[in-house]
Structure formats: structure tokens, C-alpha cells
Length: 390
Length: 224
Image (cartoon, rainbow over all chains, first blue to last red; front, side, top):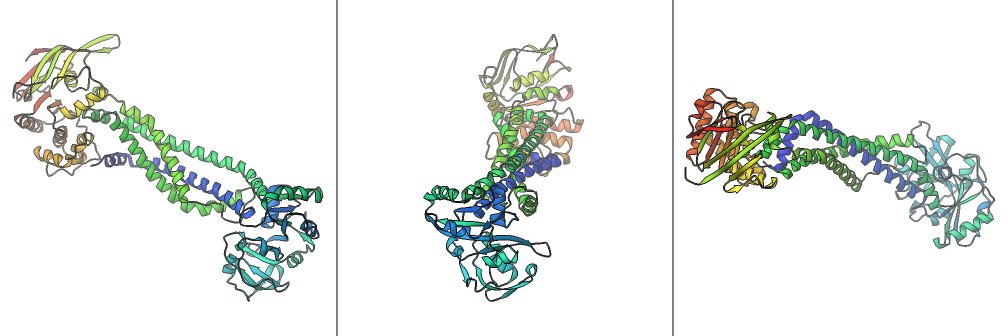
């Protein structure tokens, strides 16, 4: 028999109590794992959607609020404010601006209500702006052309040359091209010629925003200052980075609540372990006394308590991680509905091995901390005291 | 038995406080126990038998006096050293068997060896269980053993670290006469093999099986 086997056997004495304590550890681990996954996932998704991999350095928009602006710019959110198309020509000549892409973006829910399709009216500037835009097939042939993101093409089982009927517009389009998957929002988009996109929703000559790609990011401030001088007061030149940061700032309150959840889960976990181990100390008082009579020292008894805690923590964290894997899809769905801030289209709960290790480590450390007092209390039991109490 | 003194007690006094009252549980006892002795300590309840045994076993400190085990004064050493003495030099058997309910007989016997980091503890535990006649019950848990069997497991457990002295406090208190006799027979066998055995009992008949009997009354030795 090894020391850990002895600890394990001790835990088997009160199976229901051990199980409940293990469950409290599992709940704490699952909470940490899911919340950390959401925290990282949300930040990454916002960054990917608004900043990285878009090739866009700056937006000209009518929306001053970052949440509204992000919704309109990236997800086709509805807004009464628009930018006249001729503004695109006005910003084109601003020094250091390399590419200008006026666009119209809007979202349409499918008739069955299960899916929201995003239509992105673009000009050919997008081919030069996007860093990894690999088109299989061809650019738009005419106003009835559509280019599909990789995921949409896969779901609809379409390839270049196929026809697709979009019920909402009662119109048939020819798929001229399909994008190679690049794991960005583009994978889920329907790309239309700008004029077609505007006409389909009766917004001819009106833009959601103008995207700018600069020659050199060192001139970002210069371009912003020039644009602010050029544009009317109710127009905003917003860098992609500032937009992302603005969204994340709004996410801060949600984040604070999430971390409060973690704190509560950890307190519950700590109390659960401390309670179990203190009960152990009381119930096994005479036994510890006897063990000291036969040569167990302070370190042996405290080691035993810590080992028992470690076993509960390890099983609990493993269980918590398994539970989390099953919970994450449901949690993603729930949080999308519950979040009042901007919700990126990409996955916002992104678990990873590093998060699993971090969550487990925190819970195990908390467990060991919770066992500290019971361990010292048990190890300090005088052999004589307990025997005399007989 | 040889002439080597294994335990030497000089003027030992143990005073407990019971409220304002001072109780002299052990009152000026002096005793020398030679290696290989088989000694019983008898006396009425409250005479100080168990207190004396606990002092000899280094689980209690005397208020006054000195106790030497294998020549070392244990009244002045630190707890860590006492732990080592209890582990290596002394084997304990109690009236309550103190067996761990979730462990088998074999695992229970190994337990003190675990703390002593005794690498041969499994083999030794098997041999000891064989010695006390439980070779066919080694994988049974305490709930499936009789009182006599549990006490025999406890005896085997007390011997795992090859102690110099075996201390037994009312080891037959929870047993019927047949099992009680069997336990004393085991003690006798162990003693014949050279182990020093000290038994506290209130059973005079069983005490007579020992080579030497000490009668305690009011914390004092009445005869030896």
C-alpha cells in the first residue's frame, strides 16, 4: 500500500460526502474553464472581426458609439444613418490612403428563422484589401452575380457556375466564385456587387461605411486628422483598433460579472473542501491520535490530508473539464442571446488546453489552500488527548 | 531476558488538573524494565496504569521525573524525536483496535511501516499475520473479522517496525475469555522470542501469565 492509496481509501469511507465535494470542485472548474474560454474567445473574435485579418485600417462611419458602429460595419445592423456614396471619392485622395472600399452590409434571417445570412455589397477593392482572399472561380460578371464564403458554399452545396435562388429577394443569382476558407467572418458571407446590394434593399447610393486601407500604419493619426477636417461633424473616422477596443470596453461590465461568478464558485469550492476536511478531522480524531502513537509525525498527517484534498481536486477538475466540453455549445448559444454588447459572428467561447491547465491549477491551489487549516489542525492532535477521551 | 535495561523510570509524577483539584495519576514511580521482560501492570480503575503506560510509550509527558528508553531520556526531547522513538522502538496495542475500516488486515498491518518508509512492509505484514494465525484472513476488512481477529491484526500491526518493546493497554478488554487467552498466548510467544512486553490489564487471572506483575494503587506501586 502506498500513501496515495491510503488517502484514496480514506475518501471512500464517506462516499456521498466525497462525491458532493468533488462535484463542488467540478462546478468551480467548469465555471472557470467556461468563463476563461468566453473571455479569451470574445476578445479574439472581436479582434479578428474588426481588426485582424480584415485588411482594413480605418472606417468612415456615421455611428459614434463603438457598439453601434461595429454592429453596422461588421454585422449588417440596421441604422437610419448612412453615408452617401459620393463620399468615397472625397476620401480617396487623402494622403497615405491606399485603397478605399465603400460597402453596404445587411443581415437577413432565413424564412425558417434558423439562420441569419449576411449580404456584403462590395467593390473590387476588397480583393486588394483582404490579406488572404483566395477566390476560386471569377469576380462578379454582372449585377446578378454572387460570390460565396466557403462555409455558405458548403452548407448550400454550391460551386462556381451554379445558380442560387434567394427567397427573401425573390431573385436568382449565379455563383461566379467561392472563397477559400480563411476562418474569418468572410466564410459566412454572401458577397454582392455594391450596386446590387443597395438596390435589393432600396438603398441606392447609400453606404453602411467606407473602409480604408493605408499605405503605412505610421500615418494612421495623420489620416485620421485629415479626415476629421474633411468630413462633416456627424461623421467619424475610427481606426479598426479603436473600434475593437471600444467594443471590449463595453464588454468590461459583462467581464466583471463573469469574474464575480468565478469568485463565488471558488468561495463555494473552498468552503466545500474546508468543510469536508474539517469533518474528517473531527471524525478521525482518535484515528489520527493512534497514527501518531505508531509513529506518524506532523508532516505525515498533514501530508495525508493534503493528499486526500489533492485527489478530490484532481478528480473534480477532470470531471469539471469533461462537463465543460459538453456545456460549451449550450453556453455559447445562451451567452449570444444574453449579451447586450456587440456579439461577433465567430465562435465567442474558445476553450483550449492552456485554459484547461490554468483553470485546473487555480482550483487545485484553492483546494490545497482550503485544506491548510484542517491539515494543521489534524496534524496537531496530541496522541494522548484522543486516547484519554476514550 | 538479559540484564540490559530497556526502560528506566525515576521518580515519575503525573499530575492532572480537574478544575481546581490536582489529581496525582502517577505518584513518584521508579521502575526498571529489562530487555525481554514480560510484565503486567494491574490495579483498580484510576490507579494510574494507563497513564504509566502512556508515559512509557512517549505519548504523554510526566510532570516530574525522568523516563529513559534504550538509555535516552525521552522527557527532554522534542516532538519530532518522540515520533521517531514511538515509530521505531515501541509497538502499541489498545483495547479499541483502531483498525482503519476501509483497509484490509494486510493493509492495516502495513500502516506503521508506511510512516517508517519500510520498503519490506508488505512481506513483513504477511509474515506477521501468519504469526498471529491470520494468514487466511489477510484480505478481509475489519468489518468481516471477529473481535479476537481484529486484536490479532492490531498486534501484528504493532510489530511491523520491529519494536524493542510492546505496550498493550487492556488488550483483552473487549474480548471473551477464549480470545483473551489466545491474545496472551501470542504475547507469551512474542516474549519467548525476545520481545519485551508490558500489558496493562484489570484481569488478574490473565496477568498471572506474565513473568512479573506490578500492582498499582493511587498512582503508586504496591508490590512488584
